[in-house]
Amino acid sequence: MNRLIYLALSIALISCGQKGTNEAAAAADTASAPASTAPVFDGDSAYSYVSRQVAFGPRVPNTDAHKSCSKYLASEIKRFGAKVYQQETALTAYNGTQLQVCNIIGSFNPENSKRILLFAHWDTRPFSDEDANPENFRKPIDGADDGASGVGVLLEIARQLGLKNPNIGIDIAFFDAEDYGVAKFDREKYKDTNETWCLGTQFWTKNPHVKNYKADYGILLDMVGAKNAVFYKEYTSMRYAARFVDDIWDTARDLGYGKYFIASDGGAIVDDHEFVNKGLNIPCLDIINYDPQSETGFASYWHTQNDNMQNIDRNVLKAVGQTLLETIYKQ
Image 1 (cartoon, rainbow, N blue to C red):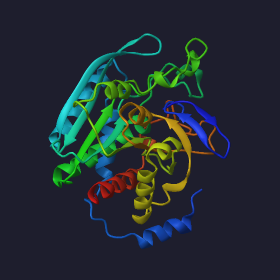
Image 2 (cartoon, rainbow, N blue to C red):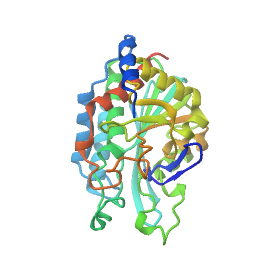
Image 3 (tube, rainbow, N blue to C red):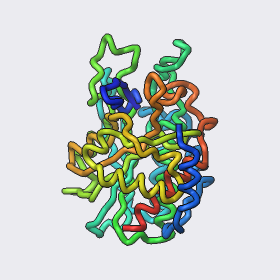
């Protein structure tokens, strides 16, 4: 993810690269949770999908790890029954580097006009520019949370969709080159604009995988696997997709996950969802871990060498995945 600026009234403005829970209420959530009509999301399975991605190494465009992971993601989502589209193209990074990127989209029930878009970025940051050790600044990150966690949840959802038809159209998109925005150490030389981030998504909004693509709404997952993660109602999401945000947060509460999905305003994130909102007029929301006590708004390992599997919690993956499955199957 990106930058962060705090606004008045406790609204933080964050971009995708600079990205106190009430226990009694959480207990009440669990006690009142109704039986889910959706398939059971397997947190262990999602964890394994996260681990598998990290095992390739940093998934930075133009690397062997990136190419290998691309093939893996496409083959997995195809194995679950999706019609797969792969958008391979060259995009230019902020510093002029030509990036060989690949957006991967899997469509379930592609003939159904009622559709939900689920998406995450699958690439990893080529820099550890928030690391405490300056010697690590130019090293790529593992991206266990920032990248792999969202994809891992969506792969498990795809597996469940293949087992039980949701009877609506679902598109699962893995967007590339989200995290190649201006490095912290390059900000005097290059202007850090929102458009230097989310390159794969920007390309897709101008070149959808099918002509005149439409979806009722979209859900972005970004950094959704960390221990003690909390998801506030992100400002940009509320601006474009407030009713969907409220419905998902209510669903999470009813399922007993209120300690993760906080019913309060959080930061405004310039992330992949903003470009889909503006480029295709599809109302989209972002589920993203947000720490209002942090200087950056993100966890301490964000954009450092410490974004590894030690931070990933099966229970958090389960909370996010089960909430989305319930949202899908109650349509």
